[in-house]
Every structure is written in C-alpha cells, then in structure tokens.
Image (cartoon, rainbow, N blue to C red; front, side, top):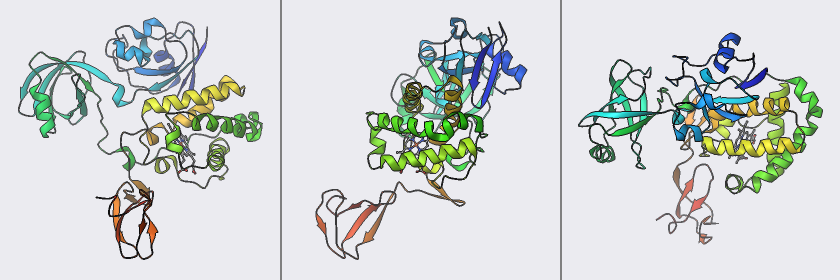
Length: 365
Ligand code: HEM
C-alpha cells in the first residue's frame, strides 16, 4: 500500500515495499545516509506520528527506541508517518576509552561514523556532568582523540574513567556559529488552498482559542505565559499563521527567534506542545492533510525556538543580551518589584534589562 511520509516541508509517497530512504532518494529529498544496510545509523530520524515497523528499529538502543528513532533505510512504512531529523542531542554513540592523557581522551567508537576534526561533542558516562569536547585527531572512522575544554570539573570527570570503560558521545555539534548568530531560514511556502479549506481562517481562530485554553491550563507550558494576555496572544498567533498560509503581511510582531529568545524550551517541551496542538486539531475535525501542513509550519521554527539557555536578541545587525542586569539611580520614587517596599529618589537600584523589574538594595544583595 502507498503511504505518505511527512518530513519537514516534504510529502513523499512510498511505493509498495519501498523503504523511506529509497522513496526520499527517488523524490530528491535530501537526508544524510551511508551504509543503507542498517548499521551506520546515519539515516536515523525521529518519528513524530505513525507506526514504527519493528524492522526499522533493529540494532537501536532502548534509549533510542524510547525516543522513537528509526532507520529510514530499514523502514517500509505500515501507516502514514511524520518524521523529523534528529537534533545533535539525540545522536548518541557508544565508545570505549582507549587512553587518557591530561585533558585528552582517545576513544574507539562502537560503530563507524564519518566525523571531522573540529566537530564538538558532549561526553556521557552516566553522571550528570556532560563535558564538552572537540575532535583533535582521528584514525579512520573508528578512533577519535577528543580534547576536553579542561575546566576543573572536566578533570574530575576524566579521573573517573579507566581504559576500556564504556562511555557515550552526544553529537556532533558541527555548527561553529551558534544558531542565534546565523541567518534565519526563509519562510516556508504559503498554502492558500488549506487556508480556504479552514474557512478562510475562521477555523484557525477557533482552533487557536481552544489550543491556548489548553496551554494556559497545562502545568509545563503555563509558566511561560504568566504575564501574557491570552486574547492578544491568539490574535498575534493568528496573524502570524495567516501570513504563513497566505503571505499577506498582516503580522507586525517579532520573528519567532527574537520573540522566544529568553525561553528555555527543550525538544521534549516542543513535542509536548505539538501533542496538545494535535489533540486540538482532532477536536476541531481538521483533516490529516490540514494537520500536517499546519504542523509543518510550526516545525519550521523548531531550531529558532529550542535552546538550553537564553539567546541574545538581534536588532538590525547587532546582538543584544537582554538577560542581564543594569544599575540605575532612581530619578523618581518607586516600589521594589520583589519585596514591594518603597524606594526613594536617588537610590541606586538594579533592573533586569528584558523585564524592566527593579530590585531595591535589600533585594539585590
Ligand atoms: C514549547 C514551545 C513554545 C512556547 C513555550 C512558546 C511560548 C510563547 C510565549 C510565552 C509567547 C508570548 C510572548 C509575549 O507576548 O511576550 C509566544 C508567542 C508567540 N509564539 Fe510561541 N511558544 C512556543 C512555540 C512556538 C512555535 C512552535 C511557534 C511557531 C511559529 C510559535 C509562535 C509564536 C508566535 C507567532 C507568537 C506571537 C508573536 C507576537 O507576539 O507577535 N511559538 N510563544
């Protein structure tokens, strides 16, 4: 049976008995791959929706199975599927310690990987710390020498290792330039047909109203929206989606990267939000195609939103870090935003650049 595979902005139909990878290659969809036999794991992706055939997970670890990884070269779909690329955090490879020399660690990989000198990784040995390391030498595709950035904590981490110990490496994180410094990808193509099907936006608004009711009641998401007026947010979100679907310039807010710059949002939290959105779509009777197209618009911004620490905001060509504090001498009396006590004119206070919240001398000790 023909199945539809949704991957980023692509929709690919597989022929009977065809693997997802073969269908991608046939359709010109670019995805990294190497051995095509299920051992190198280069073509691994994550399943967001649909059945995962057991064959597509052969050889993957329990952790990888739990995260819904699958190998596209081994996946003959049994249902429609939505799949997404792995984030570097998701790419975990077993490795054995060969030797340790000061802050350098030589490892033998559990499977061959095509990696380059300069690629960066996180090292995992079951402890909470995941020291960062850079490849400084390699022998073939199996042996790597990593240099740890050699802080005091890395030295302690290395002392806990012995030759032949099994560790994992997470990555690579090849991008030398942090995401927040790179140019944003162009917006995805509009889709007027779906917008018309969604009753020229009426159904989009209804869905958003219900979705944000659920978000504001969700204990993981609600904290982000503590000071945000729901009706205003729905209108902003609506105009942004209207722009994406129709290209009418009706959205005058910030771009998603700048807008979410201070929010620490993990892939897992994005998936959680996606699930709530999908449940809402189903309540409002959106068709599979409509759900997938809308999800694809949202997914397009994942890399602009997911991060493990706040990013500076980009204004023109400049990056401004708003997650810092400045000092100011008050030229009029006010109250402290933390303890509520009065603060007199002439007192030096600390204020947070993004929120503008003021701390009196007592609270900022
Ligand atoms: C877990 C994931 C997310 C969280 C926690 C989150 C959180 C927020 C918050 C708190 C606001 C209000 C900001 C403010 O008014 O100051 C907001 C606005 C917005 N978000 Fe998200 N967001 C998430 C994912 C997304 C995604 C995937 C998109 C996709 C495009 C998106 C697009 C928007 C837009 C368009 C606005 C309103 C823009 C404006 O004010 O002009 N968000 N989000």
